Image (cartoon, rainbow, N blue to C red; front, side):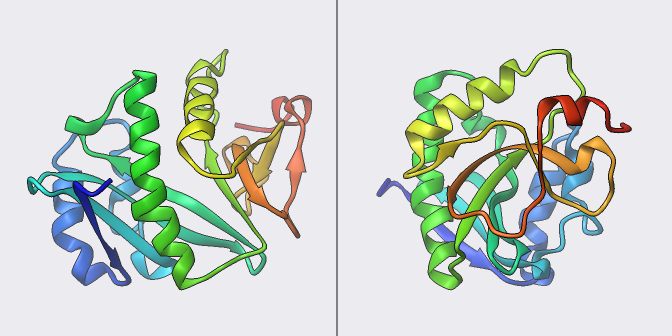
Length: 186
């Protein structure tokens, strides 16, 4: 992990050049990184990781889900050159995130529990979530598998109930089952 460094951002103005790099990629999640959808000030901190060669590796924040629970890897983005579906590379990426996102952000603020979430995306199977989760549980320290979904926003639509892994004690959160999720409006 010595070949990576990170900087923690706390405001949008300082983050602007990084956002510009992210928005160069025209992918289906691009809208998540526009100023109106990613407000750095709404996070405890937002980590930007780069390789010592100078190439940007990834970004992600710690967001307060409620006063007892923090949401790690919020709005996580991995730059294209570092993305992979291969387990060995995903595990390496999670190990980098552990050292350069999770640990430094927890040094700023600690919670009773933490979650990392992923939207279900209305697909008939959850193969990507299963693959992602399996590798996250190897690459990150102390996280546990969870069943069902956790509420991440105020709407009762299914996008506000997401797959999750967790660490610690989850207090004052709303959890639902797969069966309940299937009945929600999309």
